[in-house]
Every structure is written in C-alpha cells, then in structure tokens.
Image (cartoon, rainbow over all chains, first blue to last red; front, side, top):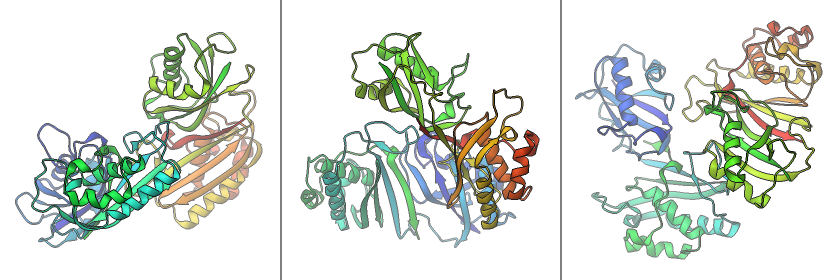
Length: 252
Length: 252
C-alpha cells in the first residue's frame, strides 16, 4: 500500500521541507521517522517545497519503500500517525494517514492549495507570535485596509503571474489560476488567504508585499492589473518575510 | 515618577518571573533593560510570582530607581515601551507604560486577577501549541465536559482553598474568593478561566487537575464541596503542568 500523510509543522527550525545537504529539513525528519518505524529506507514525497521558516497547518506527503511504488507493513494505517509521531520532534505532527492508489502523486494530483499569510500590525511585538507572523509596525488604518482588500480581489483569475515570482526562477509556465484572494482583520492581526491551482516561487510572499505597497500608498489597487500584465518582478512589491506564511489547505 | 508596565511574555525559556540565582527569569531581563535605558539600577516589582514555563498575556510591574519610590528620566512615558523592548528579548514585550502614584504597589493593590489554563485535547499533538498548552490525549466527551463545567462552578465563592495549594507552602491565610470559574471548548482546545482576589501556590494548576479528575470520572462534581472543606491537598486532583497556564488579566 501507499500511504498519504496529513502533517502540520512549525517551520522555524527548518530550512524548508525538502532535503538538502547540511541543513535541517522536515523531509529529513520524516525520512528518519519512517525508517525507524518501518525498518527500511522510504521515499517521502511532499505536496510542495516550502521555504526556510515557512509553516504548514496541513501538508501532505506520500510514503513508499525506497525505489518502489508502495510499502509493506503489518502496522494498521490508523496506527501510523501515533507511531510516526513517536519518532518525530515536537514541531512536526502527523495528523492522519490514509491509503492511496499506488499511482497517486502528492504534487501532481493537487486540485488547489490555499496559503495563509499572517501580519501582526502593531507598534509592539507579540511574544507569542515571534517567528509566526510578519511584525509590521506602521499602522494600517481602515482606508488602507480597504485598499488592500480591493487589491487582493484583482489578483483573482488566470494570469501570467511572473511579476510575482522570485527573479531568476525557472519554470515551464508562469500562468496560474487564483480562485480566491481575501484579506481579513481580527484586532491587530491581518490575514491574507489565497487559493490557486499552483504557486510560483515566492508568489504568496510577493503578493503580500504588493498588498503592503497598496496599504502604504506607493501604488493603488488600480495599478494591480498593469503590474500583473507587465510580467516584470521589478513592478510588484517586496517579498514579505517567510515566518508569516502557512500552507493552509491542499485539495486533491 | 513611578512607572507601571503592562507586559506579555512567553514563559518557556524562563524559570518564572522572580529573580533567582543562576536561573534565567523575566525579572532579570527587565532589570537589564531598565538599567540599559535609564542608566542606573532599578527596582522592578511584579504583580505576581509565576512558575517556570508559565506565560502571561498581561503581567504588571512597577519600575523605580533602586531603593527609591520613583525614578528620574527625561524619556516621555509613552516612549518607554518601545525603548525597553529594544533591550528585551523577543519572548518578552512591554505593551504599555503609565505613571502611577509613588505609593502604588503592583501586588498589594490588585483587586482581582484572572488566569487562563489551556488544554489541547487531541490524540495528536499540535506543533504550534507545544509548550503553550497541556496536551491531554484522553478524549473528553460531551458528558465529561459538562461535568467539568459544573465542577468549575463549585469553585466559586469565599473558601479556605488549602486543598488546592501545593503541599508545604506557607502563607498567612489560605482563604480566597473566586469570583468566576468557567470552562469553554473550541474544537480540540479547552479553556479554564478563573478570577479571584488572590491565588495560593499552584492553585490554578491544582484546580485544573481536579477538573480533569472529574472528566475522568475519578470524582464527581458533587464531591467538590467536600474536597474543598477537607482542607487536604491529598483530596484534590493532580497539579496540571505549567505550560498551559497564562496570567490573563490583572485589575487594580
């Protein structure tokens, strides 16, 4: 059988999801836990690469024996989360596990994903949110917030999003469809939620930085369409820092 | 002038509020920050001692020059939070500062305080709440939760609370008045809120452990009055771990 894991992780201690030499990653921890549990090396394939310091409320990964499509185990699938958690550090948790088709691919089979970006908009820092949000100190008033909200609406649709992709990234196509993009506020916290069929490198963080440019009055929401169609990274806003970003939902 | 600070801190890294030899404490950090800002040693008096690993959403402390009732400074009081935060680590924040009467005492002048105790009731851990709640894995069903809720009601009133005080504590009087005690649930999180004119050593953690004894059916809510009037620490429940506890409100 092939197993699909639903995970959560606090990304602060990790250089992203994907294994790389000489850097702690979430995948490395999962490799260790799976080998400890099943007794052999496994292939653990994630639904996405995440950047250093980025978090996940829900992240999906498949587990199969190294070089094979499935794995052999006597452990019942419903016992696997607790058993893997025993070998994982406290900042990573397997929430659930289920059996999927051997051909299932956690990245290619994604219908859409939702990211959440959290901004703490207060003069004073929040000790409980350090490394868990972007502490943005300039006050975003009601008018600036409303401008952000309208600007987010303009991101929706099928576009070439290369203005919102890290410079020097390589990818076959820079066209993506954003299904929804909303900005909400709850006290000093501002939440930007965006769902799409896929995301370019640093896309959510650059979209967030662009919303902040709108809040600051450097651009208006009427500029968004021009910035998008320019296909020029230099036209969009800054790349917001990683610690505010959460992979929030993955739908297959 | 004498200054009253409203602070928040994540207590994970600290052996409580109060300075002690060879252990990191919140007060030690405040002493350092105040000396760095004002240029002389200060007396920083807190509203409460907190245990190792306990947090505060709101904690109050006065600042005066060492051995004096007030302090001399040219810094405007509204600039003090940001200035102190510059010298404080990210897990402590000064939210606001105000001038109080030189005779004001942050502990003796408290009218009432509210503590919040957070339980994460799920088989799987939450990576974002490690060190921020008690991970209690046995499922608390609706009936058990309702029993906890009724039991919490029974804590209210003026009683000798020595059944809920850490053994071998010394204090002049063990009589306190609990004004309110409620249990709420939001998904997998359970919140116990209790306000009183004062608290005995470990009292909120033992009250929480007693509510868990009710949830587990070891005792019923009808036993609470007997346990209270027994004035016997052995009759109450376990001491819940520190990481779920937050000083939440202090009213002067």
